[in-house]
Image (cartoon, rainbow, N blue to C red; front, side, top):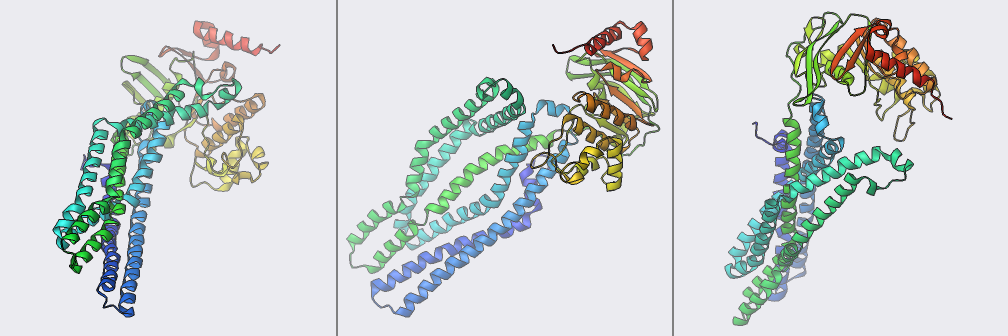
Length: 582
């Protein structure tokens, strides 16, 4: 069903285990009453005076046995719910990540990594906790009051009604507290505040070099500082609003005995010789002392559900984000010629970034895209990869519109070496193997040598098995860039996009990277986004991009002779060569 929440949808996949968990929890709850009855029978034997050692031992053993059976049943119920919960947790997270890999990159400009991390980590984790712990608790907490109420009214309706008074008052007070919370939208505000704090916290951590260099503190990051204060204020306000009602609720739940004892004493005073009535009052006192736990579980389950439900809504919002549209048929590209035909694009409606851009990259040629920052160079590359969809126009590889085939087919034909390299917390071998999952270690070492990174890898503690990142080594920007080039070499796709691949490299690493790129571009259609113009002097075609338009195309010599913008960029480029620190 379209309106069915993600939690219900995944719970249905494990309904067998959860049903067994519920049944076991129900039986366990029923068994909980046996020890109370056993205590009552022991008191009865002692009060009536006609007891034997065998009778006392019998009821003691029954009480101990029922406690043991109850614990075993509750454990089995919890195991079933935990197995179901962990399976559901795994499925939701994997499906979330799979779905996020298919949505437009525009979605990630609206949602920060901190927000998404909070949803995937904390919101999904709370679902697991709810399924593993709260579902058995809810079953137990619902069954217990029903049995308790029925048993009390059946034994003595007068004492039963008195014992129910504090329970009904407690439930009414808690219902009012929850109603107030829902009316004031506190749960949504809590999740919003937590997401803001996560998002700004990630930004603060990423900016840690600047924090250290300039001696800043969290107070200097106003958004992060404010998000912490907002979170604190919200939680304090919410807690203070709950305080009086929660104290009253807890007092009533734990004081059922205080209602039963005076009324029971009054009934006994009316007929002191009635031992049966005395025993009945004793039974009510014993049972009343056991009501606190189940009713507190019900309270925790209700508050947890409201919190989990808000998290479920946010997970649902991610799944509701439409993936990039793909054709069902896998259309192969006929060649590796690239053409942009009247392509326009806007990140924000009404503010075009690209305006009627048209150009052609001939097969097996090297092409460079240059121009001032903000002119649209990276956007052109991202449109080629379908990170975004053009507002107007068509992008073709060969004679095929890239929207007429699958994303997987497109990705098999295009490699991309980013300016900001992403390496994962895994071995160097596995980081390179991302380019081709079935590659052998010999293939990986071959491309590593071509990318000029085999030498430094061999010097690492565990060679190609060395972990990168946490509890491993940290590579320099130039070394990481060469590993990413090795990854692209292993993929060996016919089209290659390089986004300022030497931007962060020092002089020595830049030489190595240029050599690696020389190996990478052989026999491919290449688009290089460049700021250092001396690195692209000898390419087949240079496209000058400015203000969302292609201003001119040609070779280095042609543009230097006839394009003012390229002349200006080249002059600036030459000036930077002469810079020196004095």
